[in-house]
Image (cartoon, rainbow, N blue to C red; front, side):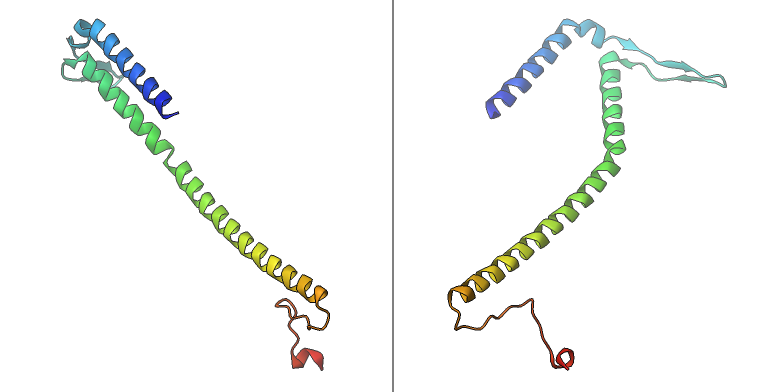
Length: 127
């Protein structure tokens, strides 16, 4: 699987280099961005088109990162809660197995009294 991932990323990088190389004259051409709002205009400085691609890609990456941030916090909290439940269930299972083993040992040896952690008789409840 590791070799497949490496091959995939290598092929993707080669494809990106080939596309960039073939469009190098377009990517290094300088253009300015002008946005015409109803209340005014905005003129961005002239930059290479490849740099605009890079800027907009990074802005999109940051937007997607921050939009999924709350979902990741909720998922982490849920995962922590489920791990705690799994640990508690494992402890309960081991306690029940120990209780079962002691009961089976008591059944195989009838002279020995049954001692269980689950049964707790005190003087106040006996009176």
